[in-house]
Figure (tube, rainbow, N blue to C red):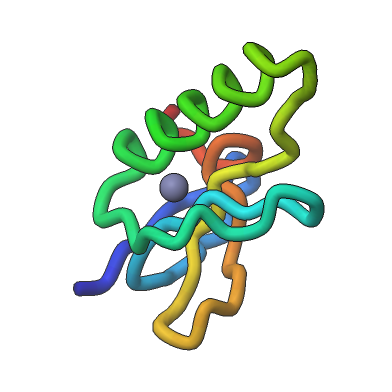
Length: 80
Ligand SMILES: [Zn+2]
């Protein structure tokens, strides 16, 4: 399934799924099919980290089948 997002600047990014990825926390391990599911997952991780006194550096990424990051919809998309 192809997912198309349009950035604020009009650039179109295309991927197949969303992932929550952080350089410290790593990938959540789930290929989310919707932006909202990915955001919920990222928020859950954020809350888990906060309850232990830390924070999550994961961000929602739109990725292709190979896991390459195509964009960050929460920051440069227009649907959130
Ligand atoms: Zn996730």
